[in-house]
Length: 123
Image (cartoon, rainbow, N blue to C red; front, side, top):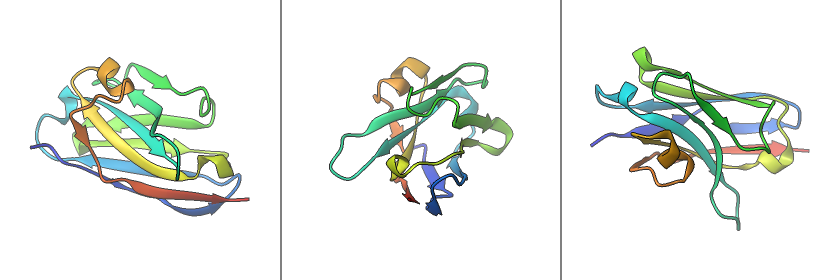
């Protein structure tokens, strides 16, 4: 059973940067497309970004384009989310997810999910 563990969340001021990490267990990490989602209190979980197995394909939500960058290091079984120019509306619990196809990840239908890491952006 694959396991995903997020880290890197915290409390920052608007305009600051954070980098989230998601470490995957197992030897088949490179076989999975990966993605990031977020859920703010009282709101539904929303797609943030996704990356294909080799890292050549990426997808972003319009709300984060130009500010967030998703990347992966298959040698370290880790996917990253670099978040720059953070805004208070980015405040949420951030989750990583993985599945065999990037379309499945983007659709929030992944088989594997992490437990989340909290990001809070103060104004």
